[in-house]
Length: 278
Image (cartoon, rainbow, N blue to C red):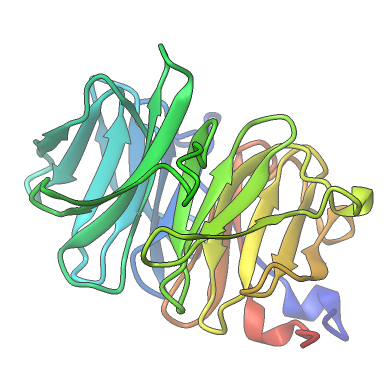
């Protein structure tokens, strides 16, 4: 951990319901100085000092937000994937019925996103790779034995290896990883490691070293695991002020943006300052 946690840790308040009216379930870094955050029907672009640069109210709830490398902004909600236009409007790029949309993320390929989909009737889900125009390129749903991979895929991130990392289930949550072809690789945590149990996962992100960071809402901590699923450490815990963490994102300078305190504030940390134990 950092030698001087007080000096190493940086914090900025988000638009909370008391002061700005934006409750932050999720966050997606726009660059190393600004991030989009929000929850329910509200979105806001904030800077590191908590200043609101832009604020948008939608007529329907938003589940997740993603900012691509081209700085295009996409949101999910209900069965619709929307793209944000610079005039504060949105256009629908896909209707995923009968599946409902959940988390989404950009990929390393230009004009491409990954989206979690959930069938509430048949109680199963899948992850699709699609163009930012809404054309499905790949559907990840079953393993080589034709067994369903996911029960309830909720959040997704792409690792530097091309692996697709997914939060599956609720209580407890599991991290399920497949390779770029959609072939099963591993699950985290190992059932035998009860101390690594994820109480309830509200988001995940992958850094530029291939580490996976997991927001553990139920246990008030952030797990750090390597790209092969081995536990490294809890990089942030209640000792660092983490309380009921929600979504998280890593920007292009390696800073971690974290919705904390049950969505009432956003904290950010330079992950280079932590002692990664490889």
